[in-house]
Length: 126
Length: 135
Image (tube, rainbow over all chains, first blue to last red):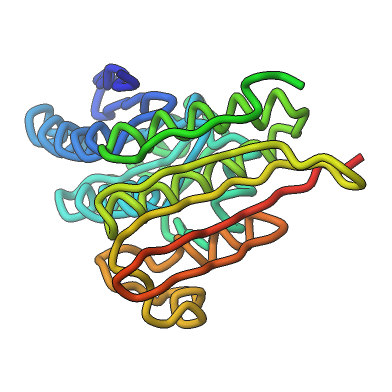
């Protein structure tokens, strides 16, 4: 089956989740649950969703991702979507899907940078 | 012509959506579509096979190359589900009868070069989409 393993790695306060390249709907839903329970278990402040191997984002996938971003925000976490391929960016936009309010980065490296900067800034304000 | 370019498969389970994406990707790549068009075709396939699974329960997808003056790929999605009451309404972005985003039909139309929807209440739906190879 196409079910790839969902890898969740904790780096300091941040969870790095790699989305499998061609997940079925079940795997996408599982990913959401796994991400949320990991946020709780690790008291993480940030989440990087790495989609650099993902070749197709359809409306179901996009809806689940934008839902997950909202859910993570309700738990006090910040999400960065990283590594969207050019062909996926073109297709997702033309399909009419909106991931407007989602923070994005070109790769995991920049996503880490963006997350630590944003988290530090909000810590500094306290 | 590569044998991958023509085929059909039934859509009965959620995993069939993944398999359809895989086969259609192979066909589009074998026909010589570029990576962005392949992604467009596979994404439209994902939307339309999911519609079959969600609304009709089961159906069939067929794909074959178009030859002649212009070359391309045609895909046909057929089901014997409830049918679409108002096709022009279903083609409007944001219109949905499920909890979806209402992007499946209008979005797939935008991703492809051509789309035809034939539907009859109580009988089913046939959707044809085409993408032309740019030479």
